Image: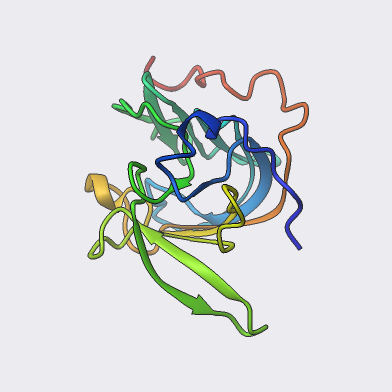
Length: 185
């Protein structure tokens, strides 16, 4: 069961978007980009302020990503693979509907429990899809992202993250928004 999430970052954008996740933290499991030759998947801690978003592998694993809107996007699967990409996004991450990075609402799907979930994409033909809870007012919670970075010609269709234990952002580690020293600054 997903817990309520504060929607701080998308309040000023609410008129344009169907829904936003806003500030949240979660755990996740999946295979990141760039892919590892051994096909390894990781457990992650996830933090979002709305405008900044990061996934950090748990334990001793070195893998993750960091999005600082307007500054850059870093992605790594070990200390030697960190890459920096442009990030000129001016709106919060994980907003869906018109004016967002995921404006296309694809057909809703029904999962085995009989619950309907929403399916969003950057276009009707993109392989980058985010599944969320159905919008409840201005709030929707992501729980599966597949094919991320496809829209920027990065990643592959099997890149995926499953989000669970989603809740309000609360006391993230102090270094969560710090660019790792092994990454290009």
